[in-house]
Length: 499
Image (tube, rainbow, N blue to C red; front, top):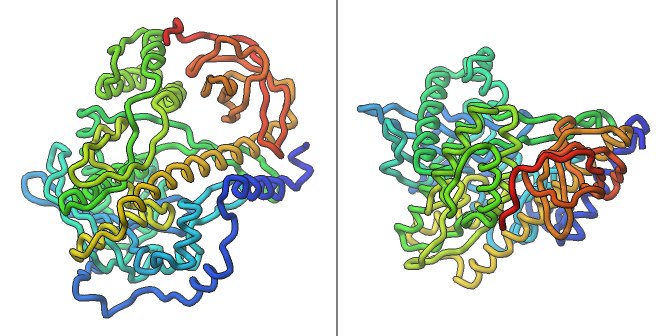
């Protein structure tokens, strides 16, 4: 199939809808949910007595250029002795999405927004996610505010959680803010238009860097993966673009990790259950040890997050170009994250990759159902009312959300491969350098570097394992099924096989 023939957008949309349906997700909103959303109104003043009015602060959002489902705003203030107070406002979605409503029923079915090349499939109707419950610029909105005091070495201290009314003063984008913070671009006009925002963002950036450094000192992993997006022009896939990390993305990531930790500790302090986000001890630590050994480094025989982080820092300094490939291998070998419901007095599993024991997802309720469920728990704790979920219900919800997240990731991965197959269809017989990203009884997969696409090694896969470098020849593509097939040409192993 030539990418000039057109029709690829329609093909990808058909593949996306079919994949969602086969996995039990609903690609379309039920009529009752759309009807319900049309009759909702944004909560406005006068606000309830327990809602603080923080609309005058210099709140801003930083997200992708085209994002309209804005979940968070941030602002900071300097304190004596090098401390700082950071406020994260999270959209109050639960006020509009009531348990058992038609909108809630659909959201609980899918549990997540699904992002694919032809189009996105939001968890909530757009009237909510991009309007009534989105923290869009210049609109008054209700939010849950997480307040954190961070000291000069990046340790999070005193914190608070409460309801507030907020107003986004500037809708900003990762790309332009990141370039500005890194000194690679000018100040975005939207920042200059708001008095005091430039200095506030610099303070937020400083605090975020402190938080990151403190986490890393305690064993949090600094991994760097390549996020790839298909670029469509008209009906054709014309490129695969890497989305680079920058300081603006790190700023939001670091502040959200801190906010999620505060929410978990807040619920724990109120003897409430928590839907935790955990990554257990690595499933294939010995393979990570093998990779380190091949690169001339050493890791202890038992899983050790701090030792792994120090190894990763050494490798980033030694070979920044290949570091994303190493990161991808480590992520695959660590195993997947999952949601686990925990209850007062219960021993809990932490998050290996973040080196924290108290962590939940709470900062994206427009896009993830676990965050919406957590918001309901938080608001009940703030109001000192009963727990809104029974134990069996919360346990079942955690398992369901884990499965649905896995389903969504597989759908998104399929569509990335389908889009890549469209792009590569004219290059049968070409050779590429790549890295093995998966190896099991089900098959062996590799990601080629340019263009950044993943496919299955159908010939010559014997003896390959995650992290191996390979040269492969493209033998077949099938965009309809997301198939990209390779044959191994050469192979560079990463060390002895020890299981």
